[in-house]
Image (cartoon, rainbow, N blue to C red):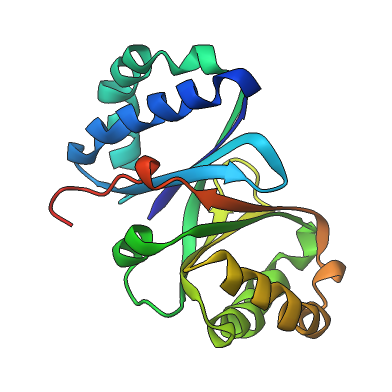
Length: 215
């Protein structure tokens, strides 16, 4: 699957307008190859909106951008509600198993999206990928409350990765951070692989979640 990751710094006084405009993207659910979209506000920055959009493949995403995106964007007038937007694209390396075994069901029920945006040392990429599979994925599944996740690699920057996980509640994610994360950091020796990491915990806005009608 192909993922579009969007981060917007929103004008504080226009958050409601941004939210209303975000709901207008509901129209994209009929687009061929569209899998699902969700987003919300960053708990560390309440004026930062984060959206993850998931597509069957790059061809489906490209078709949407060429044929549908501009019309919805113009109609929503969303451009007037934010200061900056950062958009990046990722390919799926592996899915991360959790309490659910299907992405769509997770999108429907998740309350929290946790995203780790990682820049990895070039000579540590193989190890980083292996440790994600053997240590982090296992640890998150054992923690409970993690529904599903995706381990992704950036299209433009070879050593940039995204780990996106969907959680059933903020309580479950906090429990994971307190009770499992410290040990996983030690076991994975994560700091030896990383140049930097930007972590975001996003409280999802249910009204922003878009699922294809047939799902």
